[in-house]
Image 1 (spheres, rainbow, N blue to C red):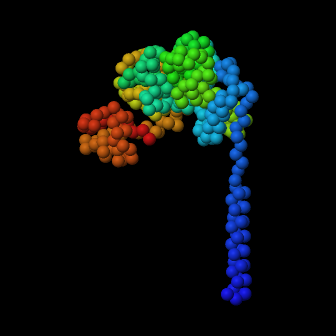
Image 2 (cartoon, rainbow, N blue to C red; image 1 turned 135 degrees about the vertical axis):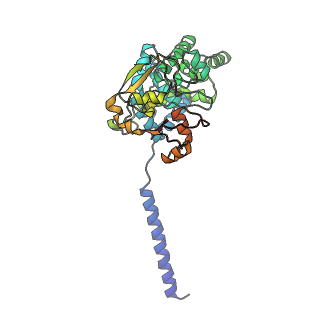
Length: 347
């Protein structure tokens, strides 16, 4: 290899090394610094001190703070929902002499959504069916009050007050909400300590109170943790009034349309109505005010059937599914459509 060729290869090598080094610098410029979450020097849950001087307590709390601090998308949603639902929960807790901090228990349970757990617990406060009935919630084929925020909050207060009276402090009452009163009682008797922070429990309950405390700390000081949310970003409950039914309702969708709103909006305000009928009177239903729900009026389409119409053709025409048509109109798949029959389509 002559000197000219060697010189050319050396120049090419220097070029690619420089290019690689430059690209690495460029990538590094896009890195961002990630800081550990600082643990406050003192924390309280329901006016009961968290023993942060203990190493294992500090580590357990650190874990929950980090998870909730850096799972930003979920935490932002929790902050937004809290502004919508806390004003409903707070006065009910106060009325039943349950500390205000227990609103964060509802956040830990459901994320302030009407969700269903793998075990079948439902609603904002995650009641199992038998427990919900035990604490006064109506649960049947037409109504499931586990989805009723006000009534399920009252039921949760009853449970928590019972647990407090049994265990003597709110921290154990919170743990009992997760583990069950009998489970906590057995752990106390077996381990011979009535301090939640000294009990060795199943993993979920072991983390449970720490998760509530971490959620409380971040949601009540979200700006301190770097969350920037404009007032217009918070979720709000539509303005509404309440109507008490004097008679049974054969068709909730027709009932909605007669009130000049669609079924979707009525369900959003009353998720505890789980069927298309109410066979008993005296239910209190939330109805959106007219200036709010006028924009929803055109979402409901009424299709008048011809003699040849069938569900398949109607579903195709309105770009929906047969299953939805059956649900919206409370009809059976085997039932033949009649001429001039009204079919409701929600868009």
